[in-house]
Image (cartoon, rainbow, N blue to C red; front, side):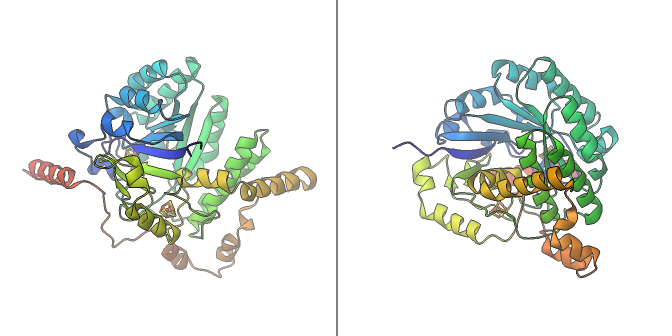
Length: 381
Ligand code: SF4
Ligand code: SF4
């Protein structure tokens, strides 16, 4: 019987050189000597898709060894990065010409540098992108976490990605142990939704079916920022998994506390994946009410429940072509209700995962937590 391949996200480190406004991960790094080893990576299952992420994955100087090992078990690998370590990225792409690179750029120059907290971060990221284009690297793209501060740059960045002939991925603000954040929230929802609407119309206007499906994803982001139920079921931990720098296998990165199915440093994959603990976590996923909408959980759902986005695409292409009717954010009932004052901002805020009184969890191991406290004490002296 053919082995079922999974979709895996490998968080190789919690160290990060950036200082993003929407993520405190840089304040809570993992200890380098605790991070995933090649021995543990060898125990991972067969995958049809692997995303390598962090923190900033290129901080790990042995990233090429990790990628080499992962290619023995994965059909496709994409690395998410802030693009700062240009030379390391180029070197890795020379060795692995098929590896995908997604660079997060949070807006045009001024906005990006403000959000990312990296001096000259935009130019570094953009130069990395340009170098990859010059060397004809086939799988390059950039991504943006849309928020009040950068929403106005959304369509401009999309157009830039088109000029460079690149993929353009979007996300919005989330709260979780992974981001070490619980206070992220969109303040001006209609303004941000309007920018998503503009992007959706650009995407639907293109000749690329892939972009039409991306339009659906962005439609889901409007639904998400208004705190509504996910448009598609969440099946994380059934045929997808995340693994953190400590070898803890988790369903996703969107939960408030880290949910652990088992530890791959200590267990074999089969033992872990088929354990009672893994089933308990799957049960938590079935009852999860966080309604997050991140590509890691939505992309597998879009493939699995393909008829739902496909129907949406057909409908909107039909309306566009035969009735000259563009997508409108007011197709979402909640957007109309908010416009018509049937629901208040406070009510929408309470549907989000933002909790101003909550102390954000960080999912660190005891050892990394102790190291963090030691460093904090040292810095205070
Ligand atoms: S969002 Fe990414 S780049 Fe920014 S601090 Fe968090 S891990 Fe680092
Ligand atoms: S909705 Fe799914 S991906 Fe999001 S936190 Fe819940 S289980 Fe994780």
